Image (tube, rainbow, N blue to C red; front, side, top):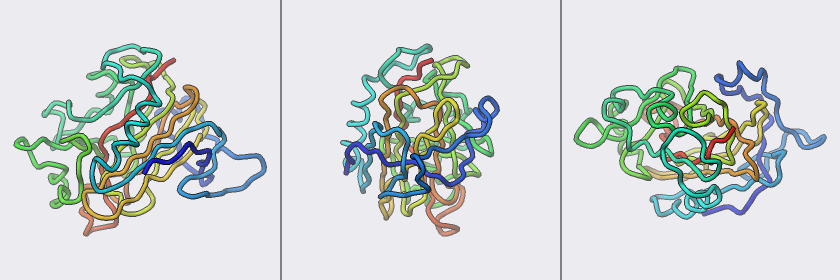
Length: 275
């Protein structure tokens, strides 16, 4: 289902910031509401910016989350072409399906592919520095069966047929830049599709240009195999500079028999990066 606009959201537990902005900004500060201590309301935490909007959904098919994804897209504006420079408004999307076979499994995806090769203003980082996009059918094992046998029985694509994951970690950080440049940028919002979120613990954390936490939100849970979940948060102005995504409890390199809740990702949807 799709949630109504929400003012809930910030988590107060210590959170390490995305590394590629930590050097520029120093230590992140955590958002608080007046004298209130840590609090958790529903599936989100308190947030210091009350005008944010949340779209979320989960279910057993793409149709179960489609309306939430479309509502989030509408909030951000029209889809812009994958070209350098900022269009000033609208949105960008990454669905992974246009990644060349040479940069898909079993090979690694460059962290800056979506700012250099296909300029959309998004640069990835993770502790290990390794990312992978799943292979297409007929080219290699699909949906990360190359990483662990049986992953394709757990995962499903929202926009067939490629999926995305980080390797050797459960966190991916995304920093926004003016597409095709090294100029840091901000945006109005960010959302992502996840597959096989069986248990609580997968999250997206939202940070401003000063490294301050704007909100931390749980990904909706949908137990079972080949399920899909979506979370998108938008802001009234372009205050979002980076996000930190936690997906699952163990990397897709390990089968679910080896640990709880492996999660992969599909579409990223975010506002046009502007400087």
